[in-house]
Length: 78
Image 1 (cartoon, one colour):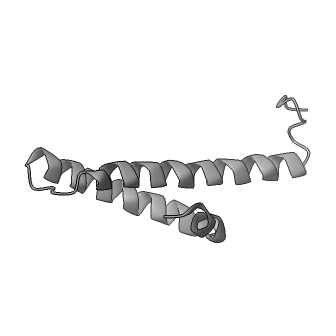
Image 2 (cartoon, rainbow, N blue to C red; image 1 turned 135 degrees about the vertical axis):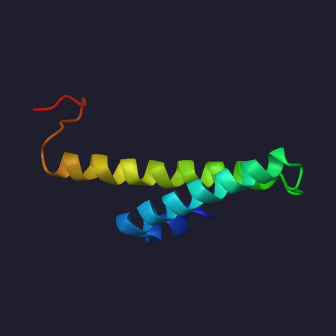
């Protein structure tokens, strides 16, 4: 999944997608342990996609806090 696709999603869609991908990665890990997974790069791709989605969520959260005036530039709560 490309970063621009992730940025187009709203927060609810991202949270839902993260949950789906985490379930998917559990299934892939299980298949990998049973030697049934032929394309093991899917594990890395999904893991990185989850990290990208969580990063975007965190950035949005920090931006919302900063615009609300809760956190100044140094990251100290005022």
